[in-house]
Amino acid sequence: MLKIALPLRLQLSLVIVVGAALLKYHAWLCLGVYGVIAVVWAVSLRVPIPQLAGLLGTELIFLSLMALPLGWERASFLLMRSLVCLVTMNSFLLTLPPHSFGVALKSLPVPTAIKANLLLAGQYLEILLDEVKRMQRSARLRGLNGTGAWLRYTSAAMLGALYLRSLDRAERVYTAMVIRGYNGELPVNGMFRPRERFILLVAWVMAAILTISSYKLECGYFEIFNF
Image 1 (cartoon, helix red, strand yellow):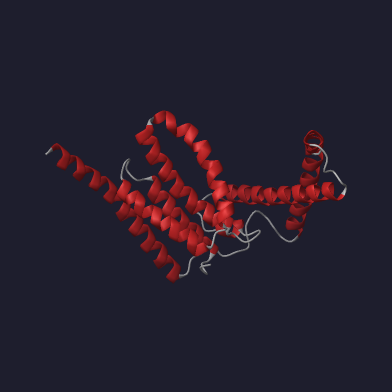
Image 2 (cartoon, helix red, strand yellow):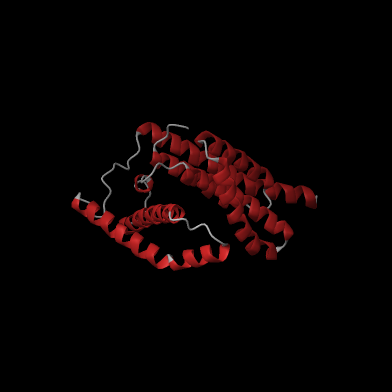
């Protein structure tokens, strides 16, 4: 995996996503370039392929239901552009170390309240998933491996207990954070070093050139076609 600081990794992912999202419709050449960049980015981060494929499949099914009514040509470009953006951001999210999402958020120019809400939401999701795994393991140890109907009933009956346990644990985690000095600000430095600023600047310039060229290529194509 590339040894890139988390804030810089997030910013570079956003460069790819923003650049691809602003492409002109049917600029397939520029989209192909962004697609290659996204694949290289995923490979360099060493993303677990099974998890990435499963996540992309679920997201693309949902997006296809929204895009297909727009027509096949428009929907195909939208889906491919969405695939590039999803590969980039999912690669970033799937390779984040535990409890490091807040460190990556520190560099974003967004209000502190939004950063705090995103950080706490991410912490709660981690707690919720951990509680689900613990309850599933407890159920297996108690021999709850009967018929499918019994397992569905057991899962539905445990939802309330899961919510209460995860909420109680989240409150304890937040209390521990407050005791250790948390006041809504993350005690990390979100400033970039000069070398990181240069890399980010080069990335933004390259993305701007590629995205703007998609509009010029489209205009040139129509001029040739009309001629």
